[in-house]
Image (cartoon, rainbow, N blue to C red; front, side, top):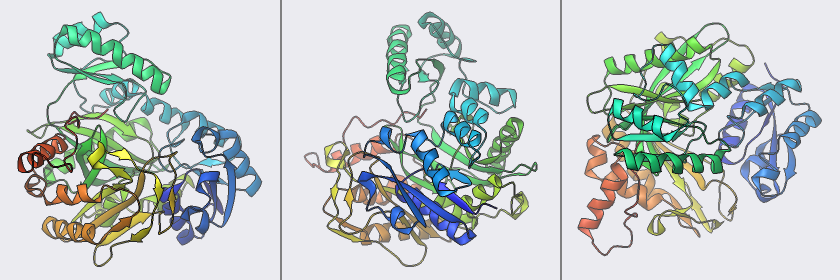
Amino acid sequence: MFKKILIANRGEIALRIIRACKEMGIATVAVYSEADRDSLHVRFADEIVCIGPARAAESYLNVPRIISAAEVTGAEGIHPGYGFLAENADFAEACESCGMKFIGPSPDLISRMGDKASAREAMLKAGVPVVPGSLGVVTAADDAVTIAREIEYPVMVKASGGGGGKGMRLAGDDDELRRAFVAAANEAEASFGNREVYVEKFIEKPRHIEIQILCDAHGNGAFLGERDCSVQRKHQKLIEETPSPAVDSDLRAKLGEAAIQGALALGYQSVGTVEFLMDCHGRFYFIEMNTRIQVEHPVTEMVTGIDIVKEQIAIAADVPLSFSQNDVVINGTAIECRVNAEDPDKDFAPCPGRIEAFHMPGGPGIRVDTHAYAQYYIPPYYDSLIAKLAAHGPDRHQALQRIARALDEFVIEGVSTTIAFHRRAVASDLFRSGAYDTSFVVRLAEELAEEKPSSKSVPGKDLSGAHTA
């Protein structure tokens, strides 16, 4: 097992990894930018290294500085968390070449799964169902039109190397597709330095279902149920729950078997998430694989009792999984709300600034992952996520009651947050019924607009209900 690990990240996920390491008897090194000097992950690590100015390009994305910090402190492994360099194959290769274990899959697998066209091809080869579309990258608008006519409109043009909704366009006919093809390619090049795109069938109002997998170096693989991530705004997840209200035990087994089948065919070794779109008939299709820990992993930990971060670290140290598939039991329901420093009344604009008051909810079944506290200054340079609030109950009804109660208890003053939005969302009949899909936020906005036509608290009408990349 590792003696010392450097966490190449910040905020709540860095603190989450530090906690796991402490419980495993592993020393920790936190890196931080000048803007994060007062973050809790800096306070609770065993060693700290400042790696540069506030801008991510000069700190959290600066590979030489991170590697140097690991060398100076004698770290044996580097945990990338999520975001930043977590799915950067060059960074993983740099870690390995400098004699440090990258806590994640191999650089080759990160590269293959990071390219969505390549990932589609790999899953097709493994026998995993994928959304109908091009077999690989499409290089010309005319070719995209030919494919679209075969699979029938509407279709999506998607960036091959992207994510987060960038480089995506919906098209309903030939003319729209030609324009969408150019626009998606241009945005992909601007955002990711890669203008390659592919085409796939647009599935209207799907559910976004993801499967948490773990595979070790000894041929063992297991999945920890599914997470429903359908509540999204502009392709960014807002609320996640497990198990999904739309998935029964038979469908869960099929989803899990498909995810593990694909991962083992790749020779995957680490924690990962296989993401699917599911239509109203229960048909599911692979869309992408995230080769890292997910933001929403706490809900899975709450219903299974398995510490995913500890398992991820152990796998990197060549330790077999501590459990088998037969040991995995889903107990109750867990729901997570991402609390962002954003103003829903202003199209969810980021709201950096100083937190004047901060009171976290507690009580049975409540978990809060955060790096924030009273008088903490939220810097304007990074993601606006400041806390993840999760509630667990023996059934969905009690989980809903607990998340609603916890949202009422959660007090953050000094900056605008999404807490009020989450209160409205989890109290809505649509969410409570469990019959929601990726159009939920749009439908919620419409319902609120009908109730209070002049209300300023209604989320913007441009909220996207399209499925994600």
